Image 1 (cartoon, one colour):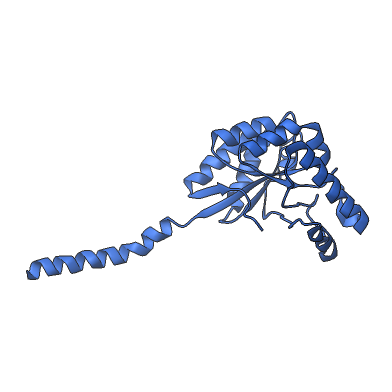
Image 2 (cartoon, helix red, strand yellow):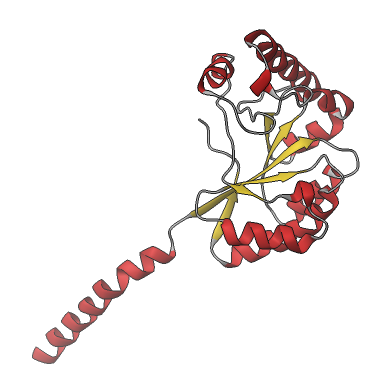
Length: 214
């Protein structure tokens, strides 16, 4: 009887010792993949093919005029479970704009995205990223939370996939928002880097999600 009791105590002690480590291994490490400046007839479809193959969801910050040029791509993004955000109508730098121009950019982009895909985007990402608090407030009054990024792939100036992979994998941490582009010439390198980044980061325990609501 004493042997059985001692054995049970030992097993319980081992279980209690190991439990914190087991819990740590199961903690979620979310990442948010985002794309700006699309859609592009040339680059967005292959990027969508990669995301589908890798079972990875992303957020696409759409330019309004491009939404009107490529409605089938917008509808595919929505159909495949990706999230649509606004990147303004035609990539104006709103840091230099007045309130009327900002409101017009937001309205035109919203209208274009609704026409193309049937939904109104939630998040807005300003071209070039930098706005002062007054302009941020104007955008938020238009009904859009602003979402920037903390990991910049610098794919807009890439000449190889390797530079994109290296920059992203060195910078990410749980909760990171990664900036890519799907509407520029250098997006060809983004498409080459993307599956490698997704697989490498999954091996490190990261999971890919769309941006959470507000």
